[in-house]
Length: 276
Image 1 (cartoon, rainbow, N blue to C red):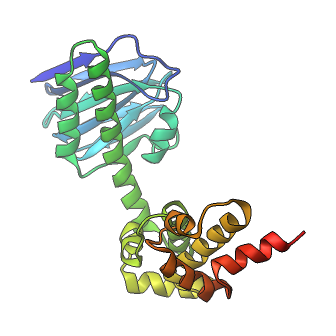
Image 2: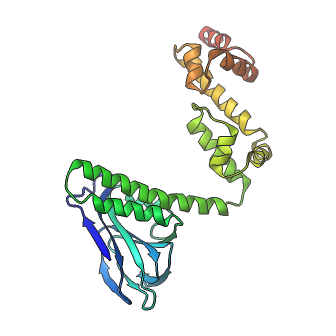
Image 3: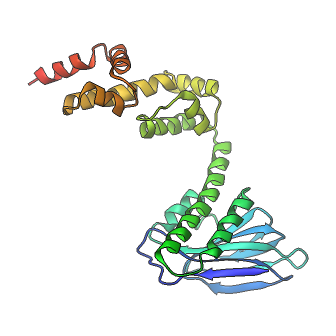
């Protein structure tokens, strides 16, 4: 059983372009290459076994494993003689393809990966195979599936990195970055803890031990510093600034602002307007 779909006219200037995809139940010992590809190709093993060879290195591939073929390099791959693999693949190019692969933990230094989301990856390729006619609509749908395909692999890579993270400071840095990017939302410590992969109590402990304040205190201080900057530099109302930094009403915001900076938003603005 097999199938493939090739797109035409892909543009390397775009940040990401779908080229082709396919799937195949291989025959025992079936070999492809050695050959040089002009684009990136990601293979994923659904079942069975095989080997991948690149740059003089042999990689054993089994269920849940995948490998990356880099453009311009001589490589080959071969199905096992006893348990030939059933595998899927996606080819792509683009100006930011290497960046997206880096998110997946892949590049010249690492050619193989593991992903437990076999069904999701298979579904992506199956959907791609269905968009086999030309047209802007199908082109966008193919690109969407390609992003989803890479997303599942990147998520697995990120989970692996989190499991291997050794220092509390790395968790704190990740949490602070999330706060800086999401402080305008209804952000809670529980949501923050879920994002970094820790329970709420332990996240609070590592924050206190690392920067001498809780996640909630850091969030409030960041919001208030951002609000203070807005109060001194533009003419938005206090209510507009409150909503812009994650508070539903000006009263709650004003109380938090005074508790943090010692003056109300109105007093703070007046003091800064009076300065020469």
